[in-house]
Image (cartoon, rainbow, N blue to C red; front, side):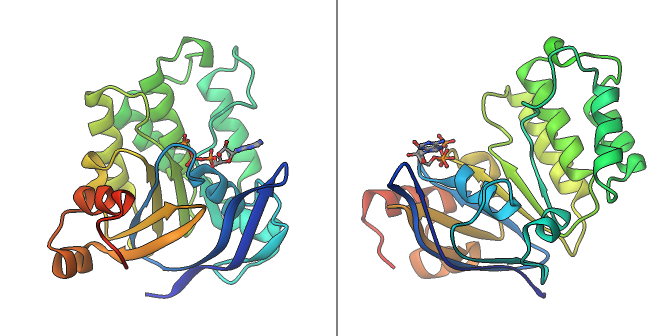
Length: 236
Ligand SMILES: Nc1ncnc2c1ncn2[C@@H]1O[C@H](COP(=O)(O)OP(=O)(O)OP(=O)(O)O)[C@@H](O)[C@H]1O
């Protein structure tokens, strides 16, 4: 287990309003980590800052030893929501784009995941259901050969069959030395995957715990623990 992600003294404001305050975090490699928090807690913002999509005004982020934004981008595969592509773009063209932009994109891995998830290269973005779009985002994100994967609410708005497929593809295609951070505000379905849990509350990382510690120290499952932290009935 090597140190993969380090965040030191991160502060982030938008329109003069604090979105994230005094965030400090260390993640090692080889884990599946849940990033949990209610709507608007700052999960997406934190992922965008880690991935180098948003500039970091205050604090230091290091991923796999890299701290410059351009180098960090090469070490993080972030689940892009495909908003930059026109509605008429075909899946095959998005895949070509990924191959051109990311030297670590592994076409063979994409083809395997795409086959498993039933993605058709000829389909246009505009014709994709929410579930198929979610599957495409997962296939593209996991097909980069990198150390840190950030999946921003990969199950949001997706039907239960597709959710199961997405979860099983995460398990199947995760490499041993990579770490996958999955954000969500529902916990039930991802709870069984998780090694560690990060809870964002009151604009900061309230606590990082291993699932084992949560069970041993509080005698709670991940979902109950998360709810009780938010209710204030569990303290650090
Ligand atoms: N562009 C922006 N301008 C102003 N405020 C913003 C902007 N983007 C996000 N925020 C605010 O930052 C806070 C955190 O938002 P963020 O989207 O990171 O939360 P989240 O935990 O991902 O929420 P959700 O689960 O609803 O996706 C919210 O209060 C939101 O209103």
